[in-house]
Image (cartoon, rainbow, N blue to C red; front, top):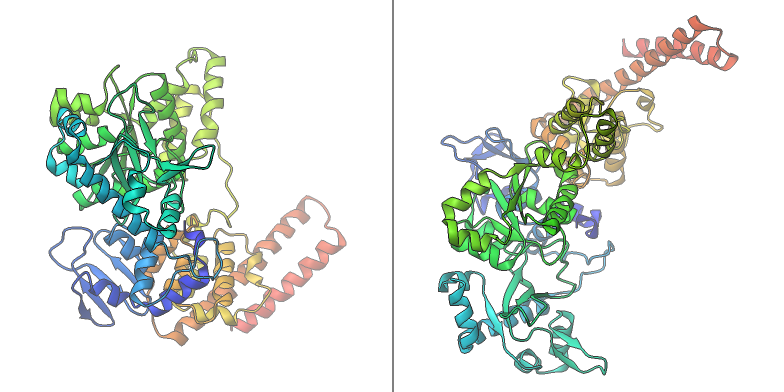
Length: 576
């Protein structure tokens, strides 16, 4: 999502936005020396541990560890996705967000499209009380007036032109109806209402705006049972989840979210007092879905029918979840009895009964190994080898961390085969080196984050790159990024890594970084680079010396060794 907004615009936005102003509009701040402080809005506390730094344009809570730029604060506090947070900040400072596609041209204004879809939802809502059949169905399914209003449930009456007559009016509005997916065309090119004789469920985005609809027939023989809006400029079914907005509105702190298959299953859970359910929109769970789910809550329960189709859907959800299971995130699987769905089970067992089922949901690790081994004889050597062959590439997709280590250990326990994962190049997975305590590389990165302007003074080529240590490539990349954007501040520099794996580690490092006296930090930064260069020379010298003990060096290697010894002496003298 972020890729559609140019880095240059994010730089400009963060240059104009003051994080203190952004946060103070939402949380009362008090001056505390160079910083501002408050009781953290993300966890309960009596004494303030939440600090906002104007110099870094960064916030950090020493209690719960929350931290980030103004964009991250808005995403966490307002429960917005990245593009919506950008829209919100841009509107506050009078900027227009560039259009999708990555160039700097203004993005087409979709206000008319949002307005039309909201009007369509209102029209369907107004039609519901006029239909005896629809009212009877709602009563039969146990939907009370409050839940009908909360989900803005409506009715699309019979007839080919109801919505066109109500909202068409002129060519522009007909064009919008078509763009919004509200009308369809037959072979002759005649237009007609896409939704007819269906209970209508508006699909809302993360800001509560109507972006599409799902329609359900009342009689099973009518078919198809559910009909969703087609893909439109506002609606991409592989990214959206039905009822996510309602879930976030109902839960200020969400620990668990449940994914079910149908709109009525979602609504039944909300009405029963479990406002933690969402549904995908007629598609299998995608990687985009799982990222959105884990951003909403650390625990995700995938709830499916226990039949073959349900288990196939569950496995697709597992594959989508694997790359997003960073430490602290957990996935579970709940398979329902034959012929049952959440709607029917909640009617039979009530909220407490369904809660018990959720608590008994199968952890991903258990489901993973049982599914891979279901047709394998693990008592035989061949069977254990097959299990290892199936599991290794999937476990390799897990993010580096405790969970992947434990899954690898479990595979070894079950199969006897070790799951060995090759270390990826530092430039791709630099989060580890950043976390190394008291290293020269960590020190240099911290100082650069505090004073990005020092990057302009680093001579090219970067001699420290010869040092074979984790994090060196990341440091060079940070210097290049800072050099390419004169005047960049710490928050801007951090945000350039928002879609890269090192982002979380850099944020933690930024939270611990102190912005001090500029000249002193500049000297310390270049001292760190000098020591890194010295280490690189010693490292290469030792390599060549060790090689010479095993056999004679060639003439080029001998010349390099002599040069390294001379350079080492000159650097030591320069340091003195």
